[in-house]
Length: 181
Image (cartoon, rainbow, N blue to C red):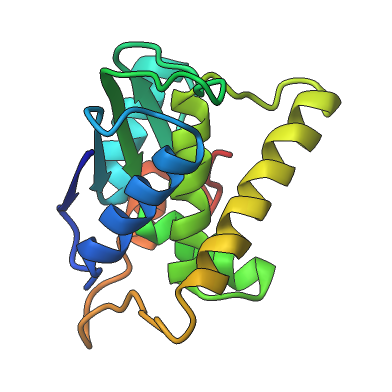
């Protein structure tokens, strides 16, 4: 499995943790070891542009998934092979959500990574039943990953003095602090 992690933000993020998480989740979902995944961290403006282009929704969002070969989880006897796709995350939105949820930005970004992978595998949360299934699975995967990596303790941080890109985006677009979900 190949998981490429790119960080185009000022956030200091350990890409290896996200690569390891991607490989582990894909293996748990029985995606072939020959499959590829890209995880990209971007600022509010690029994700807002993607959000408008692909979802016709204004403003930055937390995570977007772009499937390539429309792989689905393996059934235990077979593993699905191909290019899983791309996940684009915005650490600024993740930080805001983490604060509201009472956990770290890193935990939120890891949750969003799993969420994005599940979307790439065809999971969705349009109906209440789909939401229960997808959110339950992402929680189970995240907690199991944490249990297996005790003491990892990695953090996502910003260098001192880094301007708040999400607040800047809001000011520039007169969104009044609203971000899309």
